[in-house]
Amino acid sequence: MKLCVIGLGYIGLPTAIMFAKYNVDVYGVDINSDIIERLSSGHIHIEEPGLQEMLEDALHAKKLSFGVLPVEADAFIISVPTPINSDKSANLDYVIQATESILPYIKKGNLVILESTVPPRTIEDVVLPILSRSKLNVLRDLYVAHSPERVLPGKLLEELVNNDRIVGGINQESSEKTAELYRSFVKGNIHITDATTAEMVKLMENTYRDVNIAYANELAKIAEHVGFNVWEAIDLANCHPRVNIHKPGPGVGGHCIAVDPWFIYESAPSLANLVHTSRTINDGMPKFVVNKMKHLLPSNNKNLKTVAVLGLAFKGNIDDMRESPAVEIVEQLRDDYNLQIYDPHVKEYITGRKDTLAEAVHGADVILILTDHNEFKQIDPKEIASIARGSLVFDTRNVVDQQKWSEAGFVHYVLGQQSPNLCKMGSGYIEATR
Ligand code: SAJ
Image (cartoon, rainbow, N blue to C red; front, side):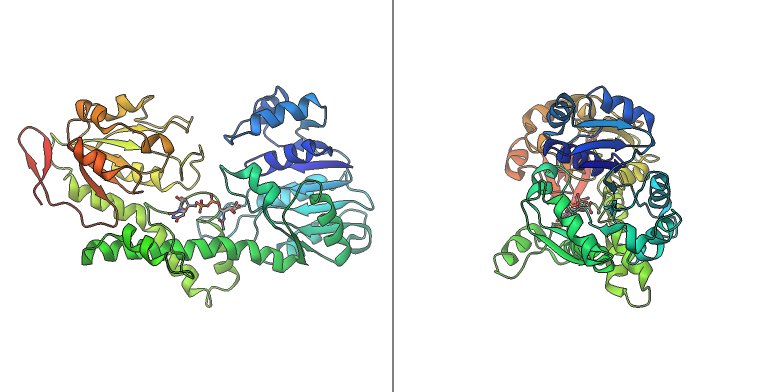
């Protein structure tokens, strides 16, 4: 079996490497020649625990090679991004280009699988018409299916193997061929359905999470208004066997949950009211954090202007900044504050970025935590107290140990609790006057 994987990003690369590990001959394709060079020389270009070693093993076993153009194969997996346009409609350009790119290489009997997350009916209305431009009769000569990726960045390798998989073929044979291919490594159940249902299932999963997080964010705002601790209240509500309220935070990032609900909305705008409201609530969270920040540290005071921002990635323990609320918050705070930013995972440069925690916190009036990296949970507040100027920590993720930080002299304000009553004191220090 020879497999050609188109698109070597956060999903395509681990998928290609996983197939290679399970003895499939894999050819990985990406239009970015830098990525191809890097991978061919044995270095991954994304952060994912365990992936580097697996790449080295696959290259060593000669089961995996890379190039910028597709090759002939038995099966093709398309795993390219589907961004949203500024009007929130799906941008299918990469899916279209990737499908067109395999046209010269597909033969009778080949299997074509789309893994990218797409609006409902994309296989039927976009992919099949492109494939029918080949000399083949798509329904008779090819097997085509949508099998959405459903893995969590940070736990990708484990979830690729153990999660259930959805396979939606254009006919029963396509579904069966696709299921057979994934059985090379998938230990979870493989569920067979039609292509449009498979497209919707993927969108429904991520939208479920978006709606649930929006509810948590709304509760966090209500908590600040009414005067209770939303984190404790959610924990207690979740003791109920049928309740699972998600966590509030500075907003929803990443290329999936902040994007996919729009694909449902696009398919039926007048019907998708809850989906739209949830997106609006979550998209409004960065502004909520910025306003809070301005309330805690009025920006017109020249002596109180340095903010240590901890975290840029859209969630903990990964290096991905796509749609990150932290980046949006940073951009909105930039004009009013001197920002000293630190993220131990992100490698990209961003203005104000520091290489160490100590540099970021040095002379800071407020410490603003935007990402739940493990490194931030382990910070020793006593060390920070000696280099920061102020004594307020604004924790939008509830990551640090409140008691430890209080003992070290900090006022710990968590999003979704009543904010401390602050006033500026003496030479640039902030103290609580609850
Ligand atoms: N977030 C909250 N509160 C929560 C959970 C998450 O604010 O309680 C935020 C995170 O901080 C982050 C964003 O939501 O900014 C998304 O993070 P996530 O961990 O919920 O999801 P992703 O985007 O990393 O991965 C999701 C997963 N989908 C589901 O869990 C239903 C993953 O399984 C999918 O494969 C992935 O989207 C995808 O590629 O679609």
